[in-house]
Amino acid sequence: MRLKTIVLIILCLLLGVGFVVWKSQTADAPSFRPESNKTTPAAVKPKPFDKTMYSLTNPASVWVIANKQHPLGPKEYVPADLVVPNVSLRVPGNESMQLRQVAAGALETMFSAAKSDGIAMTLSSGYRSYTYQVNLYNGYVASQGQVAADTQSARPGFSEHQTGLAVDVEPSDRTCEVEACFGGTPAGVWVKAHAYEYGFIIRYPTGKEDITGYEPEPWHLRYIGKDLAFELNRTGVTTLEEFFGISGGKSYVD
Image: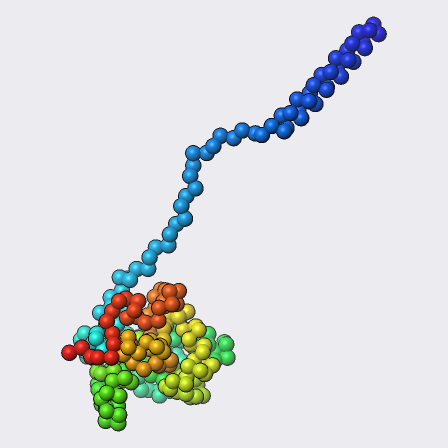
């Protein structure tokens, strides 16, 4: 009886040792995993910006280009949705205090954001009718001559202001109003940094006179919508002519 017990104990010990050895060997062995047939999907490329989203020639389009090579058609165009934005106005009651509805709303939002940052601005000039531009341009010609006038004021029918999408802004204290020094004022610095966030660009930037046809005007903003404004900011392109490959320059089309 004692012998059977001893033998049984020995067998149990042997089985236990064998199990421990087997366990250690299987734990060290690398597990086999079949290779997956799936391939890593390629990174999705962002879609190129759609430059055909809006017309560049229809005067009612937010992307319309009006420059010395591209007059408005018809030259006497009048926007159908002019409104007076709810902002500080330089000349209340004047027709130039109007903008197209979409631009007016964007200007209100932008001025409100600027005010939150401690920047108070005023609408200096917005929409100008064909007749208004005739009188303005002729005044420049009379005082400075046509060559100088063509660098500072658009001829009638060629002005962005006639679209109702262009706006001249100024500090509410009228410091550097409609002058090159506006760019160095707190308002000018703010506009340069933030205008695109509201769908505006500085239409006549420094260094692009041969392309836009005009001297730099840091106060002159053009509403083009957020899609295009953000794309210009992303790419670093500063003029509509360069972005769309449209002719510009200082000479008027015949």
